[in-house]
Structures are given as C-alpha cells and as structure tokens.
Length: 340
Ligand SMILES: CCC/C=C/C=C/C(=O)SCCNC(=O)CCNC(=O)[C@H](O)C(C)(C)COP(=O)(O)OP(=O)(O)OC[C@H]1O[C@@H](n2cnc3c(N)ncnc32)[C@H](O)[C@@H]1OP(=O)(O)O
Ligand SMILES: NC(=O)C1=CN([C@@H]2O[C@H](COP(=O)(O)OP(=O)(O)OC[C@H]3O[C@@H](n4cnc5c(N)ncnc54)[C@H](OP(=O)(O)O)[C@@H]3O)[C@@H](O)[C@H]2O)C=CC1
Image (tube, rainbow, N blue to C red; front, top):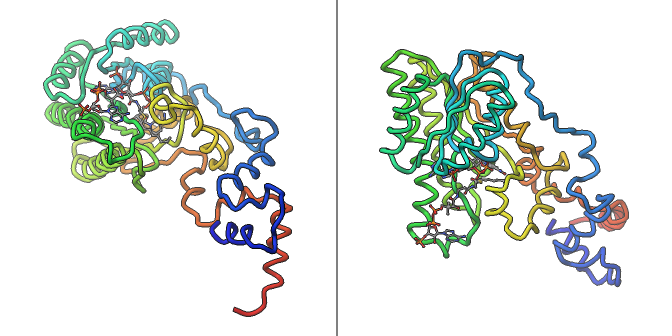
C-alpha cells in the first residue's frame, strides 16, 4: 500500500482525478465507491454468503441438558441462549441487570417452550458468582454447558485509561471467566460430572489491538486459561473451546466500539465476505461446540469473522480495493521499470 501511495504521489501522475490522491483513506474511499452498488451495509459479494440464522442441529440435541450462559440477556449471549433453548436445553442466564434477564428469559421460553432461568450475577465479584452458582445448583443442578460470554469493552486511547478503567474490563473479562470457571469446575469435578465449556473471545486476542488494550489483554488471558484447562481438566470430563468472533452488530458492542457509526463501513470494507456476522451464526457454532457432536473437540479456537483477520494480516491485501483502471496504471509503471 505504501508503494501505491508513493506511485500515486509521483509527479508523473499529476492529475486532478481524485483516484490519484496520495491519501490512503481517499484511495480506499474511491475503491469502495467502485465496489459498492449502493450505500447499504453490505458489499456486493455478500449475496454469495447468506447468513443462515435458524438452529442447524437436530431438535432435541440438548434435551435434558442444562446450559449456563453469562451475559445471556443481550446480544450474542441472548442468541446462544435462544438456540440452545430451541434445541431442548434448560438455560440459566446470568448478568447484572435482572430486569433485562427476566425479559429475555420470558421472551425465549415463550418461543421455545423450554425454561430459561434469570439469575443476577456480577462476574467481577467471586461472592456474587458463588451465590449464582448455588442458586443454579439448587434450581436445576450442575450445568452440562458453560458459556463464558459476559464482557466489558470500550474504545479509548490507552493514555486516557485510569487504573479503574483497566480494572473494570479485566475484572469482567478475565477475572469473571476465572471465577465462573473455577467455581463451576470445582463442583463438576467433585460431582464427577462432565461438561463442555466455551469462551467467547475475539479475533484480536491473537494480535492485540490498539484502543481496546484492556479487552485485548483480558481476552488473551481468557484464551490462555482455556487452553491450560484443556490439558489439565480433560481427565475430569471437561472440555474447553474458544470462539473468536469478528464484528457483529449488537447494541452492547457497537455503542461502545463504534459510537458515531463511522467505523462500520471500514470494517465491512475489509471483510472478504462483504458483511458483518450475525448473532445466529455465532449461536450455531456455539451450539455445535457445546453439543455431544463435538465430543472430540477440545482446545479448538475458531475464528468466525468473514475472513477479516486474514485480510488485515496480509501486507498487500488492501490492494483488493484498487480499481481496474488503477491497476492498468500501476502495471504500466511496473513494466516500464528496468533494473534495480
Ligand atoms: C469489532 C470486532 C471485535 C469486537 C470485540 C468486542 C468485544 C466486546 O467485548 S463487546 C462487549 C461490549 N459490551 C459491554 O461492554 C457491556 C458492559 N459494559 C459496561 O458495563 C460498561 O461499558 C463498562 C465496561 C465501562 C463498565 O461499566 P461500570 O458502570 O461498571 O463502570 P464505570 O464506573 O462506568 O467505568 C469504570 C471505569 O472506566 C472508565 N471509563 C468508562 N468509560 C470510559 C471511556 N469511554 N473512556 C475512558 N474511560 C472510561 C470510568 O471513568 C471508570 O474509571 P474511573 O473514572 O477512574 O473510576
Ligand atoms: N459484538 C461483537 O462484534 C463482538 C463481541 N464479542 C464478544 O461477544 C460477547 C458478547 O458481546 P455482545 O453480545 O456483542 O455485547 P453485550 O454488551 O450485549 O454483551 C455483554 C454482556 O455481558 C454482561 N456483563 C457485563 N458486565 C458484566 C458483569 N460484571 N457481570 C455479569 N455480566 C456482565 C452484560 O449484561 P449486564 O449489563 O446485565 O451485566 C451483557 O449481557 C462478549 O464476550 C464480547 O467480547 C467478540 C467479538 C465481537
């Protein structure tokens, strides 16, 4: 990309045509205008990749199973709860806002006919976690499925973060996952009961990411926690897997990560599939990983991001935004070049 900018900056290409402006964003903006048929929220190729949302597993896959989902009242957690409940699970959803949990539980159980239990829980507080798990054990017993989905996040330059901002995110994401996993795990081990654990992290758990530094640090820690327990707790009948979603337009995430709405377009431009992911797509993958069809899957980390991570990783992948006319110009320059 740097090469192209230099080329377009060259005097030999001096022109008023905006296509040759020496500005990365403008270059990409023009490329996008070419790619986009309209100003909707999908690129044209998205028509090849329709999001199928309905539960894909067989009805009854989770019959007689209990699933515990943190953050199950909203967004992806709500979607996973709906799918598991549709497939027969009795779900327990836990987060801080009991009114939201109650509304979600009512909505889902009325659609699926299976009970959903709302339990207030602050995963940052180990005593609250213990009380929540006590209540679940009392109401429905120990879970067969545990999904660590609750999270906190917001974009901010790291130099603006207070110690408490770091703590709010890392306590929720990393410590919260640890408190839930240790509490439920110990009880499962004592009861000699197997279970499938799933952690929802994100694609930047691998790479780190500026402007969400506490979240990136905590999500990487969650992945290390999971992978450690794959090895250590397999002998107790416990398996652990990780889903790394790319961008999915939930209110919780996008209100904090794209507060002006300007970033969404940029995300779609770098997603090869040409659209954001959907809640139903995450829910189907989660259901599979937590089902007995995935009994032999432990220690898997699955990216579900429409190819965004690969796109961002490749040095020259942004060239996919260069138009045919721009390629004609560049090819001519390259072919004229002789020697080094
Ligand atoms: C796009 C592809 C990849 C996407 C990945 C997505 C990952 C996600 O995790 S999305 C999930 C988003 N959902 C949530 O965050 C839901 C829960 N969030 C919250 O409850 C809040 O946003 C928060 C995390 C801030 C926690 O709220 P709480 O009421 O407990 O804390 P506060 O007292 O409000 O804040 C704690 C300290 O953080 C400072 N702070 C808050 N917002 C900002 C900000 N925008 N910039 C800088 N600092 C902020 C706040 O001032 C507090 O610090 P202090 O003043 O020092 O006490
Ligand atoms: N949407 C996206 O683009 C992506 C999301 N993710 C991950 O997906 C998961 C779900 O995010 P999403 O659905 O988008 O966002 P939401 O904000 O809807 O979900 C976060 C949930 O966590 C709960 N939560 C937050 N803090 C606590 C706490 N201290 N104790 C208990 N529960 C808490 C919230 O409920 P309450 O406020 O009631 O406590 C909320 O239900 C997260 O792990 C996120 O990191 C990963 C990649 C991309």
